Image 1 (cartoon, rainbow, N blue to C red):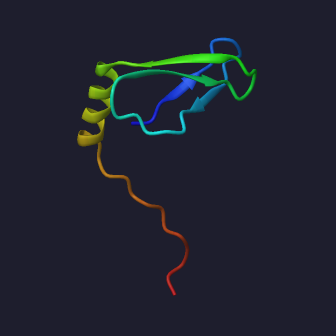
Image 2 (image 1 turned 45 degrees about the horizontal axis):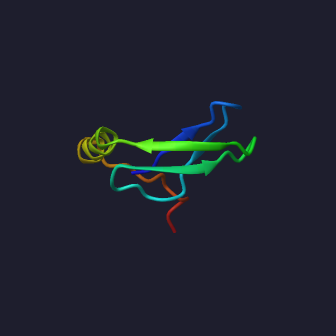
Length: 68
């Protein structure tokens, strides 16, 4: 799963650059105000992400241009 973190100080939203597969806690730095943010991923978060991944409809790719 991927996590999107919102800074409580400035409100900047950023995507965590690594895949999260199990509950864990780690720190990241806000790209906007440079505050240290604590990210806590719970077992419930991981379960919810797995449930969404298995029940979500497949994504369709947009056409890249005219067929030749």
